[in-house]
Length: 499
Image 1 (spheres, rainbow, N blue to C red):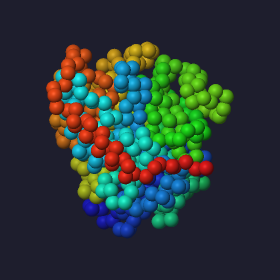
Image 2 (cartoon, rainbow, N blue to C red):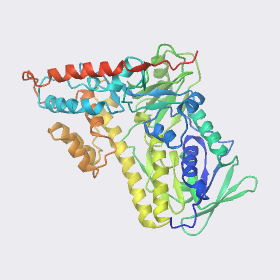
Image 3 (spheres, one colour):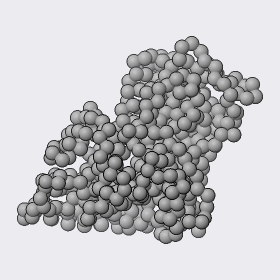
Image 4 (cartoon, one colour):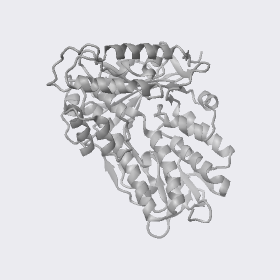
């Protein structure tokens, strides 16, 4: 490191983002003399809606050596093998598809899926629905969890569902037990140093908290990055229409699968997320196309809770700040940016931000070269995730409401997304295009893009279905199905619900 010792880190705000960042930076620097302090006002609540994750959350807990049984039990958590998208396409046979987190078994089946997609794009009548090709879909459909019996050598990639409030509390307790300082104080002012640096946080009781690095986890308010340092916010409104969510938990009503359900609605989509104690429900929508009252009524009708429970309406500020790291301030969580929860990427970005920042800081301290490269990488991550989510809307195969028609006609697309769509419809190699556009490190793998295009049934319209040449793929799909079914029998039945 260029500094004589690791920095004093002050995190403004708790919640999942604040405590996750604190845990990671403490784990990185505490043994070498670093100190992390979290300043969290007891008067300011957290949004606490995010209840799903990518496999990056498992990597986070593994990195900190936190046992799965300990944190899951404390956070009402369940397993997540992927996302089931329903109603995003009206094409026969493609009304629903499963987007899996790919694992090691899928390395053997994915090539057949990709090959069949290429043939289907040219008009051959071959099976190219993603549900036929990946182990996670079979496990979820058979109500099996991600842990195999005995000596079966392959574990699928998986994420979790969890109670966001309880996750923040668990991480707070874990962190403070290991030396992270928790200051439950209300910050009333920010003392600036020279240029774009923060000198201290000034609290309501007169306490002054100094630091070397300040992490802004103050939510959409972005007290440090935007309010104090004037970080520019780049809106994604022309790319992503949704700006509201109405949330309403419900009781368990049936045996649940280890998956998130994403179900199309008239002016957006709703999630259904199973926890051990309840089901999380939310309707993400655009206020341009539906009122808050009508959105709530539509959600209540969908989940059968017309007269029960209290719904919350949340406003979403969709976009990102231009630079995540400015001076001695790092933004994380909602202070940094927000992309709607369709792919549950919020905590994924938090984790990547903290780890990448620690690397960059150790290499260059406050040096502009490493800071600029870090900012470019984080910005590219946001853009890549945004493009994949925009693709869900742009490629939708619905025609029942103006919302879906306008999304399908939306031309406010990045050049990278235009390139992927063009590649699919002109029979290019999607994997090569994906790698080329992202310098060999795409944010979504080729499998995910194939699953999205094929899951909707968006094959080139000029391709006429012709009979499959004898022996070309029939044996392969039959073999794949037998292989996946045989693999699934090695996994335990999934029974996550409490009595």
